[in-house]
Image (tube, rainbow, N blue to C red; front, side):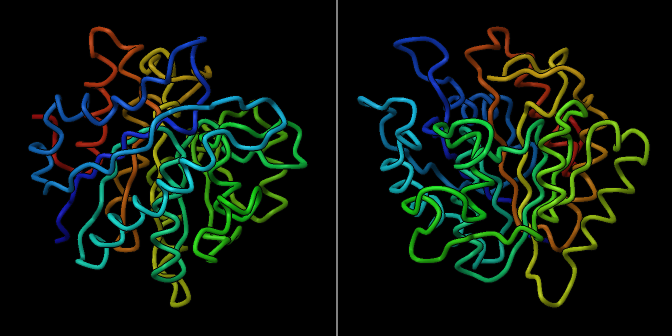
Length: 301
């Protein structure tokens, strides 16, 4: 039985300001889930905090590449160091974000250790890249593209280890059925995509078990699980930066996560994007905590 180790990665470096003169509130995610006693409820060990650099886009303008790039390039290896330490000790890191750019820290840590895959449970693919239809800028919407080597070298080739993930080792769950263009691009790159509609047609448990088995191969060392809170429907999770309709319900998400987390090939999990500033009564944070605890099979007490 691996020990769960909770690590705080309260970085908001990868998101655009929600309003002029403000910063994204997702850096408060870890504190909000800790307030819901996630560490105690999971009987987890304490992994501490990896403090990010200051959020400061300076004089960045559209077309300048990824903003906060220097800060991200400094933060990612430090987060990777903390994750790698616990992986080498045989622990299971649970990394509380932050925005989705923290996934780069996990990918870099795993690249140091071998060949690992990624299962991204997210409403969108986070695959904006140079040459795509949308301009780059916010790493929180580009981290899978960056991890697979698409983008500026100061983020895609840290320590000379890029790409951190191979295309064929990435899986997506929970994308909205309306994002057909994104699905077509990813499928052409041999990155399997399971939409919300697919999950409901084929069953989350069966699809998750089948996916986990694809990583239980001699040439692969395992996979990391990435959870973006916006995979949930806005009716139950409005406290995200991009609340797209027609998302998963809590019980559907638990049914998907539980077999993935139970797989011996799963080596860690990060939780991202929930913004306590958008959740004044804390109900969405309590729900997200319940989902994570239930997915580990620990109940809701």
